[in-house]
Amino acid sequence: MILLLILFGCSDSKRNLIVVKNDHQINLTEIDSVKENLNGYWVMDLGRRNTSTETILCLKFNEYSAFWEHVIIKNGMLNKTFEFNTSGPVASLIKVNDSVKIELVNLGGADTTKIEYLTKTKFRINDITYFKHKGYPELKTIME
View (tube, rainbow, N blue to C red):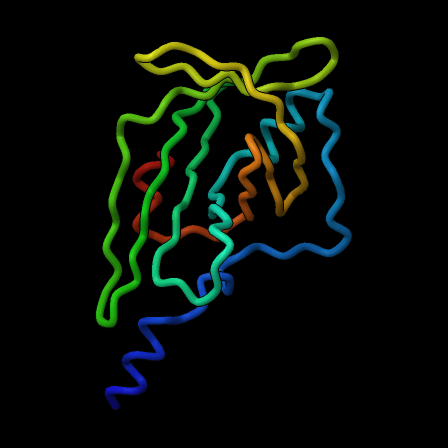
């Protein structure tokens, strides 16, 4: 029984990833398409397997702005704990020279960043890769 609890607590976080057939790169010149495909939950690729911690980026664009909210989820043996980062910047989609970029604005200033890669299931910015995640019911309050 204890072994079962340990295995349950260390379950693979990749099982909640969204998988689609014929995943293809999104046209990064069309701002509405970029917005539509960025909305949702993204799990940060930490480069480790079987970790008990996930870092989820929650994006819900209203018009072309969203809070850049990271939630750290720790899967313990008996429950999940959620750590909310409420001091994240505001992300705005802007079109610069026929390419959609993200402008991140917080109290320390602003930075415009190129979206390196975007598909329905994968997103790369600032050399950090995110994978589309199904999300958890507890995260619905952030997205509303």
